[in-house]
Structure formats: structure tokens, C-alpha cells
Length: 379
Image 1: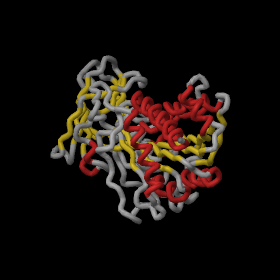
Image 2: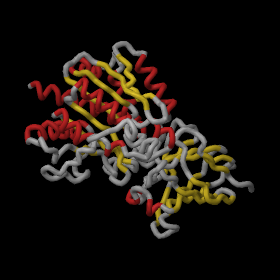
Image 3: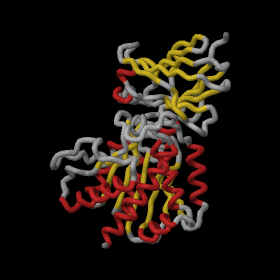
Image 4: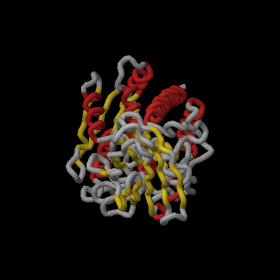
């Protein structure tokens, strides 16, 4: 029988084809441009003929996050609308670490990805739909190195300045699915949660902080190979115009509450990281974050606090990271939301793992927790 064909000539496509034989292939990850980071993949397989595909991605022991591969199942779609999971196994001793994906498609065409992609075309559809909604203002914060617009959507009449931004790391596409869910709440005049929040807050929503990396198929960096979430102390137009534009806009508005939305390769849970260790830390400032965390844990079964990142010691916070810089610079209640690439081990979903749908539902839970947090603060 003839060989399958594999290609990546589309938005966020990324993989290196080494060998193909009939329905089997050996592949290798591609590095982000001018960077050592590699973890993201997104490719299309054609001419499948209803055969079982055996796809091996090799050399994973030197990927950005090797701990992300055990217990991970690749995302797969035959219509690019519904993304399920293909049974996958990882062997660290085979070909420098190998993920073996096995899947039998029902048609001649199938897509695989590290997580369900959120294309730049979908991004522009989302921005256009929101910008045409009554009460929503569009603001172009700046341009990327590739000349793409950095989009911001603003809404609400309240005094509390809330910044929601995601996908500093472009391969963490669950972050923009979360953003789509948040905007569906905030931009819908029939949604009473959105209405109540808009009465109390002025929202500034940046659905995608890294359009260049997203389109190029990067895991973690922009067009110049720069990790944007290590640029917040001293962003520059030459290396990180995205961060510079966002931080300048924050300087204009001030920030009371900020959530930076991400995905974690290795930890099979949803969690928050705070700003412990910033120079101006106080127990009162920290308690505002911890109170929000407690509210979200009570409201959302998908959220937990047992797993997460270690806290920085006094004075040890890295101020190049967004959450720490925003908390320090504006005395804001700032946080990083992390969702899993794998699944939520507390509530596993064999069909989809962690998914776009769950990312969007989590956004509603986060916004509900924000409203309760604001009301408890007022009380």
C-alpha cells in the first residue's frame, strides 16, 4: 500500500518528518525559531486509507519539558472542530525518548496536535465578534515583530481595573480557549454574571499576547525566540514589543486584579501561582490572592491547591515574570492560572483529557469567583 503523507503548511503547524513507511512514521519536534525550546507539534496526516497509524515522535528527552510526556495522550481531530485523544505511550529509553501514537481514523485525513489549536483566524473571528458587541471597545495596543496587531477588548463601567491576558507562551493554546469562554460571559448582555461584573469593573482582555509565536507554531517564544514571560521587568521594542505594549497600557489604566492564563506540561491539575517573595509583599496583600484562591476552590471542582509551583522565599520573587511584576508595580492582586496539557487527574476524561470545552467552562468559574471576591471585599 502507498505511504501516508505528513505536512505542516498551515497556521501553527510544526513537526520534522524523518521517515515514513506505509502507515507508520518517525518524527522529530522542531525548535522555536532562534530558541532551544521545543515541545509543540501540530501536523496533518493524509492518505490514511482507514489503516491504523503508528506515529513515533523521537528525541523527547531533550524537549523543553520531558516530564510532560509520561501519561500524556496526543490530541487528534478529523474535522478540526472536536479534539479527542489518541492512545499514546512514552518510552524514555527508545530513540532518546519516544512518544508512540496509535490511531485508526475513519477517513483519509486526520490532524494531531500537542493541544487543541486555537488558530489566528479563530482569534480574528473572536475579536471581530466581540468588537461588534454593544458596550465593547476595541484597542490596538501595538504591533508584533511580524507586524501582527496586538488586540485588546475593553468593557465595563466599574472602577476596578481588571486585566485578563493569555498565551504569552503560544503553545499553551488552552489559554485562548479560556479567553473565548471569558469573553462569551463578559460580552453577552443576557448573561447576568457578565452584567454584574461589568457594573463593578473595567475589563481589559488580551486574548493572545503572542500572535507571532502562535502562527509560527512555537511552544514558548515570540518571533525572535524571546520568552515573553521573562521580559516584564525591562521589555524592549526590539525583543519584546508585545510586553512593552501591554505594560504601557497597564501603566495608563492601573491594575487592581490581573490573571495571566497559561498551561502546564507536566502537572495534571488546574492551579494558581501567586506573587510570594515580591519586595513589597505584605500579609494583607497576599491574603487578597489567597481569598480568591479559596473562593475558586470552593466553586470549581476542576480547581485545586494541593498541586502547583513552589512559593518564592522573602525577597526572592523573579520580577521578570508577569504576575510578580504586576503585583509589585501596581499593588495588584495578580496571579497565574495554569491548566494541564494532559488531563485533570481528579476528574479525568478518557475521551478528551483537558479540553477546549473545559477551559471555557473554567473561565466562567473564574469570573464567578471574581464577582464573589469583589462582593466579599465590599462586605
